[in-house]
Length: 262
Image 1 (tube, rainbow, N blue to C red):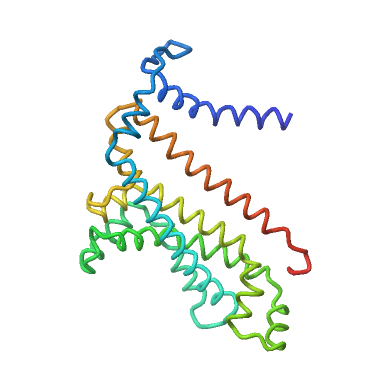
Image 2: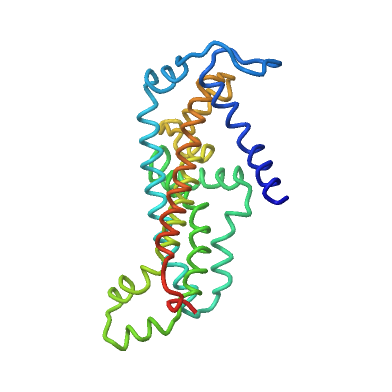
């Protein structure tokens, strides 16, 4: 019974993607037709090969998403370690402060960020876009690494210190291998947030920095179903690919003996 329900839910989730795939490959597909008509590769040719913005927008998205993933992961590691391993006044306030962007409506948040970026002269710059994306990504990274640091036995670090490990050696040889699955997860979430973000990218970038999402939006908004479907398939394929790559790397790295954790 459970397998039947799961298969049914999977079919419901896959069905819209099947429609998108058909729209990208056939020039005529209207209700009440069950099967589309007039197979063509024109949409793939115009949206990918003949589109002058395709390569540059995809490259911009990958670069911005990678930078956001690295920065958010590094900030998440440092902040989470401080929150877990050290006691200081206002600890709960600090943690709550980092999670506030998740509870503020995106439009209100980024309109406020927009005014700040103007004063900092970061408008129309990649650095401003990365900082805007980090506002959403960093809270996820912090909460991920808090869970990992809480699961690491502190005695392991204490033993390393008594054996003469320097802080750098202690982190690189003991802590880093244990939080590596968290690094994969944090980086992938930050990457996907940045890669899929449209409003903040368009607002902070001022329309001068074209990413894949900002390039794809006009096709979908204007009802160009064929070209929009092609770009949508590429867009979703990248996101799904990142997700499964992260899952594979995490599963591979999680093959650690249970004595490493409490």
